Image 1 (cartoon, rainbow, N blue to C red):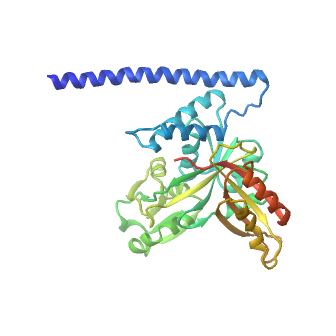
Image 2: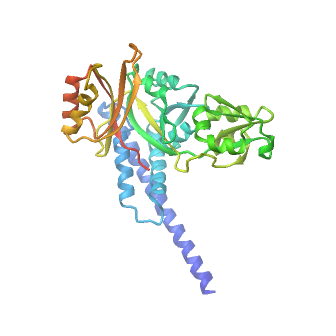
Image 3: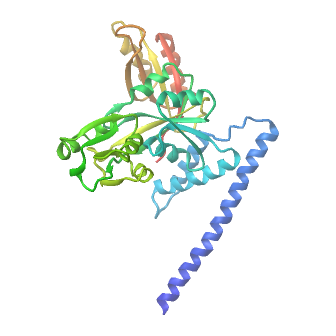
Amino acid sequence: MSKELTLEGIRGRIDDLDEQIQELIRQRAECALEVAHSKRASGESADFYRPEREAEVLRMVQARNNGPLDDETIAHLFRELMSACLALQLPMKIAFLGPEGTFTQAAALKHFGQGIVSQPLAAIDEVFRDVEAGNSHYGVVPVENSTEGVISHTLDMFMQSSLQICGEVELRIHHNLMGKMSNLAGVKRIYSHQQSLAQCREWLDANLSEAERVAVSSNAEAARRASNEDGTAAIASDTAAGIYGLDIIAPNIEDEPDNTTRFLIIGPKPVAPSGMDKTTLLVSIKNKLGALHELLAPFSRHNVSLTRIESRPSRRGMWDYVFFIDVDGHSEDAPVANALKELGEKAAMLKVLGSYPKAVL
């Protein structure tokens, strides 16, 4: 009897806490509405979404977390709370590489929360154009995978786009083989994005070496086709399996258990410093002896850490290249600003693609 009373007491305590939490959420939502009213009354720009502010809030949430929930779970809960409050001010339209059920959509929801209006588009260049035209507030595109490297199409789009990088998302990728069949013996053809096929190459060689592999525009498109074709399976997310009514035949078939894809948030305006930022640059240099050393030297002199450097053909002439560079810090931080000033005097072309908060769990 005493055990039952103790359990009943715990449940009562939970009910009391739920009531307090709900009241605090109501108060927070009212504060969000007051912010919107204040901005409109003062004639301020209706930029209710502030990437640097949200990143700062999530980092504070994680810093004061004492468990038992882990940092990622706590951040997710607060992300959804901020997303719901922001939707009261202005529901944001977010373009992403579709269709429904892609990992890019999962990245968009991880970054912005469920309070957005999703806009799936068929190709990366369409996402750029949609945001440039003002049809969507922001876009989400994949940029690199820990196993297979960069997404060339995304980098190439930055050469011609005026959009800024406003944020980044890192998403652990789990690939699932799915279809209408009950086992591997029924799989004659496999659809997936070329990156996913590459990320599962060893598993496919070992288990489905005879099956035809067909690259399509996205994993969600692969799942859609598999739902309509006999003997056809797809490699996609568990979300796509639910959307297209497919059974997961083999889960987590990626060759690398830590397989992670990085996505970029693209938008029309620069982002203010958050205190823990990254800056991405597009640089071209004259093709001469020691040119690459000259390109990198200013960062060393000003103690700026480079986290990535990637070369791409410039398409302006044979063997002419541009470099995409990620550095620690915001372009307004003194060390980065000084390095960029010096670099601008040496480079044939320098374009700051954006300074933005580093990915939060």
